[in-house]
Image (cartoon, rainbow, N blue to C red):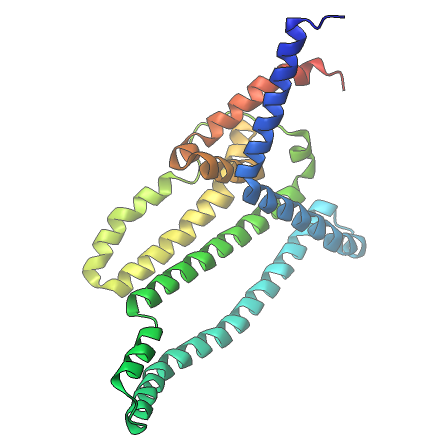
Length: 274
């Protein structure tokens, strides 16, 4: 029996969709892992809140409040304790390095080592540029890890508070682009703060980061959810996912693109009686 052209076209279209889905999943695999970790955090929060709800008689949602507060206190104390130890060791290491290097040079001179061997030993020591490059890369890795941890915790809390909302997948149009605008406001303040020195500029930058993160990742998603019914966790991970795939333009267009995908899928969802 001959195969119709429409059947071939439909099969080719399905294959293209599957390939595109795998490609997109590979591009945002880091975001998917963050989302999976956030789901695990939400499950852990519910498991920890269940005994509190039984003992106090609170609802499962209200029991999440003391659970989250206890976890934040534990994480804060742990970070402070380990951070103090690590900071002290790093400061001590930096203080000892010049003396250690001078000791090595003095030992070479005492042993009357040839100039060629001394040059090889000095060449084996990383240059200042290499050290700065390593420190820069290390700092970026630490910053990325901290950002990933923040996304996991924030997403896990949102998922734990309103699991049904995200299970149903309700998406609506947002009236503003999240998490981008407040960054531009820091530039004039930093330029003014530089007149008072680098330390003042650093404190100003830290203040803007704290305020911007609180506004963008906590207040703005909740306001969007109330005004246009956009789930907060969807807002967080959609911006990160589209930014990963499309760059800065993807961050700006994350919400419209998410709404477009939902609009394309809506007819099939409405046709499904379940």
